[in-house]
Image (tube, rainbow, N blue to C red; front, side, top):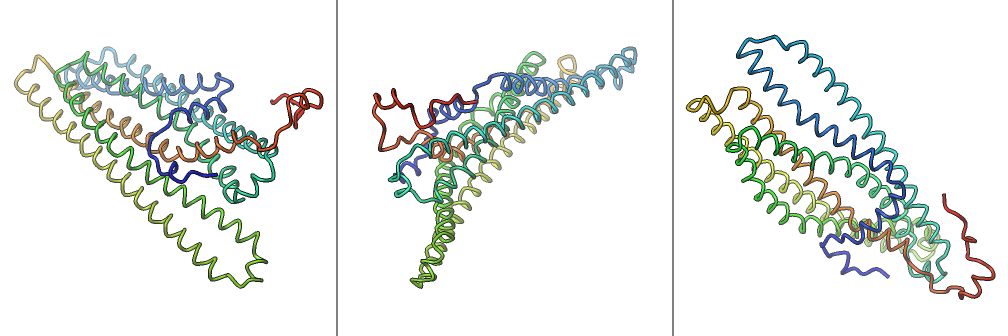
Length: 354
């Protein structure tokens, strides 16, 4: 039933995620709310360095406190906006997580009621249990919170780039030049990490099946005195899971480290080049502007790190998505004819699903 070669493929399949999203997002209202609150958070994050630049150039350098009351009011409004956006996306993401988990498990369990005896004869109980529990939980977590991070990270990068280019494009080019290298690193590691996570998920499913069969077959094990054989089989699978998991963690750590090094190369270059413009071309840039560029350069690569983590999470969940979709879409080997269904109805009598 399971194509082990398919488990080892490392190509992310958009068709699988389209099916998952079609299962989950029957109501678009919560997605719209989630996008709105995440967008608000990204906009407020981009606003903070601008406010700091204004404060440095006007209050500390020029000594002009004429607009101080308005500055305080704006900052209070920003603080309130942060509170509202954080509350909103946590609330919406939490509900989406619960609804996703419910919908995946409901559809999978409903399809299990339709399947023939032969399916249960060929499929280990542990495999089914892993789909209904760990895979459903993993997908609901990644989809709900991954959407928050995805929207926030993408919009934060857009807002920061627009502000940088509008303010002083020569320094903005430093950030832009580093971006292709980061995308190349992401592309290189993406396939490798996905392949390792797929292997880990395969061994995890085998381990879950051995757990379940060990419990259900305890009497048989004792009767045949095969405890040592079962233990050795379990130990081999557990060691394979450990090795695959360690390899995936090492690749992910190396991936994040390389991105971090590239980001701070851009920060250091911005500081050096910005200081040069400040010292020798004072009319082009102010101290507040230089501080703003440094803040934006640091802040710009935080969304990139988030995006790389989201890519890794979705790669990790690819195998889970494929397996739970395969469970939902598996067709029974024995079906009623159309004329029989027309007279007697289907197994669930076409009950309306709420």
